[in-house]
Amino acid sequence: MQAIQIIQAEHSKLWRLATTINTVAEEIDAGGALTPEFFDAVFDYIESFVDQSHHPKEDDYLFRLLRQRTDQAAQLLSQLEADHRGGPDTLKSLRQSLGRARNGELAQFTNALRDYTEGLKKHIRTEERDLIPLAKEALTADDWQEINRAFLDNQDPLFGEHAKEEFRELYHRIAALAPESVGLGGHSSGELKPGAAPRVDLLLKVSGLESSYGRIKALKGIDFEVRRGETVALVGANGAGKTTFLRALSGVQPMGAGSIHFDGRDISKLRSDLRMRAGICQCPEGRQVFGPLSIDDNLRLGAYTQPKSQVAGDLEKIFSMFPILKEKRRLPAGTLSGGQQQMLAIGRALMGRPKLLLLDEPSMGLAPLLVEEVFNVVKTLKSEGMTIILAEQNAFAALAIADRGYVMETGTITLSGTGQELISNEQVRAAYLGM
Ligand SMILES: Nc1ncnc2c1ncn2[C@@H]1O[C@H](COP(=O)(O)OP(=O)(O)OP(=O)(O)O)[C@@H](O)[C@H]1O
Ligand SMILES: [Mg+2]
Image (cartoon, rainbow, N blue to C red; front, side, top):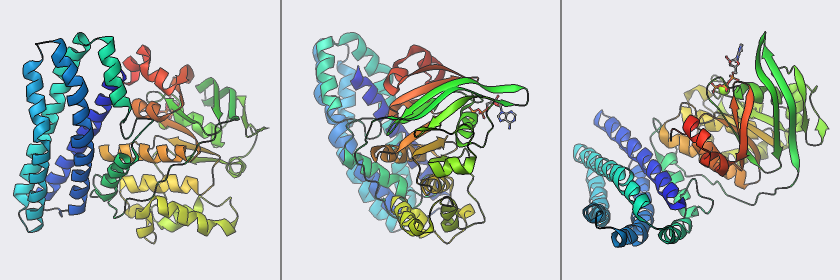
């Protein structure tokens, strides 16, 4: 039932958006500034994605077929369809209310926002709690085939392989334009352009890797492979050993046994700076930007193993990906918001021209909207052909964008497979996805 997965992914995305809208509304009530361009972006997204795509697909396929199969659904469906029909008008009045808010009528606007998000959340809850279970019971395999086809045709902006670029771009704008407390607090939507990913040979091969802290063995013989152009997720609970593994790869954590082959040679005994020069660049857990140094200097530090001649050009590339960093380039990194610091940390790693990019929990501690934005960045890098290891506690999101994944438990790899295989795996669902 791929359609159900897509609908649920779309729901969780809308839920995050609703949460974000509420936070911003509260800030406005508490005297914060109104950011009209953020709300314009939100309304544009809702209009084109929710009202013109998500709802019509539900109406035309899921609801229509369900109505044919069972009488039980009639009342429920009428209510949900009425919500859908009301969508465009609600949005129109929200836009008008935003217009009045620009002239100072803030309280009415924030109240209207809260009414809207409350309605949206109620609608999502009804679909998840009542409609979907009923549909699972009543619909036939043929029905699902038809519904799946409709939903796969136009998949979720973040998690779908056939993502519609415009939805993704619109959503991306929301994070860029949102106030700093919940977004990146920038003024531009950036230019994150996808390309083709070459997928050929093995870039990294780790065999029997062990590593210890004193007498505690944190890694107990890890076998791990990454092909060129792949995004590989490493998921596992707190203390599983994800960070230790990434640090062992970049050479800052000593290894007790095993071997690491990278880009055609054995680097097991290579110093960390030489591994970086060879193309293993790590974006560390907790970002670890240098607070007192300017954004510019933080990025330049990422290029310390690179020839000076290419630094200026590479800086511009990073700035075109993350316009907010360009705007603030002379300011101390410590003045950036959490989300911006994460972009800086990723940018700094990219300045080393990685052949293999190691991302350690890039979504940690970020506002919900930015969690999504970070995964968008990873997705874009992936589409440009970057090879990535993504360590995450946020297992679902990581596996959803990964080609393959490994599950780590107390220093051991317990499962591996494609991202989709792991997402569908009962054990993984129970342990990490809360399903
Ligand atoms: N500096 C250290 N000294 C001693 N033990 C450590 C140290 N760092 C980590 N450990 C231990 O090694 C094990 C693996 O930790 P690690 O940080 O690699 O896990 P993780 O999967 O990255 O966890 P998290 O999701 O919390 O980041 C844990 O048992 C942890 O307590
Ligand atoms: Mg960690």
